[in-house]
Amino acid sequence: MMLTTQEIILEYVCPLLGCIFANMMFAAPYKAVREALAKGTLGSLNPTPWAAMTGNCSGWIAYSYLIKNQFLFWANAPGLLLSVWLNMSAVKLQYCDNLHKLAKTNLLLALEKKEIYLRQSMNGIGTTSSSRGDGGPHESFDDNKDTVEAQQQSEVIEAFKKLISEASVSDNTATDNNNNCNVQTSPHEKKVVAIVFLWLTIVSLVSFIKMTQSQREFIVGLAVNLNLLFFYGAPLTTIFTVLKTRDSSSIHWWTMLLNTACAFFFTGFGIGTNDYFIIVINGLGVVLGVIQSILRMVVPCKGSVESLPVSCSDEGTIEKKESDFKDANV
Image 1 (cartoon, rainbow, N blue to C red):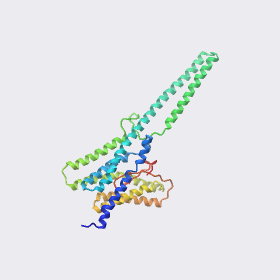
Image 2 (cartoon, rainbow, N blue to C red):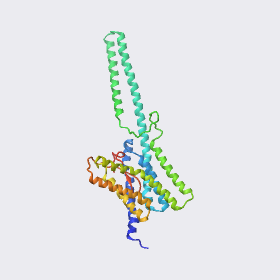
Image 3 (cartoon, rainbow, N blue to C red):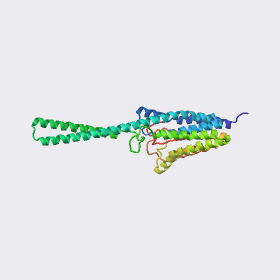
């Protein structure tokens, strides 16, 4: 049976283009993470979307197995592999930030102790000199020399303390209840483990509990859609920010284009396959993308627009957080 033009476009062309855009979006944080690894600090990057990216890709891959669709698989399989690398990099960088913070704290404590010792030494010199009275020019010269050296060391310590205090160390560090740096764990580890545990539980339940194929598809499809709702807080926040500030500089054209195009193509694929789990979530992505496009054209741009990397929400949607990737380029 010959395929119609509509079937070819919706069931083959749209998902193929969607795969391309999806993998472009998954790879967007790559450059920023490489730069962070070179610097040895997480900086302003927020790794939380990468943990959810692991769950998102895992969910869609599981769904692709159930409905036996390779387009969904290849739209998310590279993203799953990349998310593993992103999460491993985030854990390493958070660990480095923790070590930096611990070293900084210990160095400040050591300098403070040295400063206290020098002050006590200077007070001791003055007291000893006063108690001895006039011991001659030689003793007076030695006392003045010791005092000057102690003052110079104290000034050097103050300069070091100021430099260390102003050093830019990431705030994404783990602290224990005593406000001390904890280098044994990082917050991101817990998020990744929680996401993996969640999807391991879901996949295990639909695999081992007796149910129909349609019930398995419903459970996995619903779970992955609920997982994606979390990410829609980012574009919604951007829209409300633009309306409140009357400034559209937080909307990045390239990010919005990738987001809307990917959502559009997978919405078409969902229509072609009559799959509402794909239609609804990507349709929402298209609507949000169109709204941001209108705001970008209507509302004036007062600030400079940075090239911001993005983190994927699903094979057809993507979220952007300016605070998460403010120093990186797509």
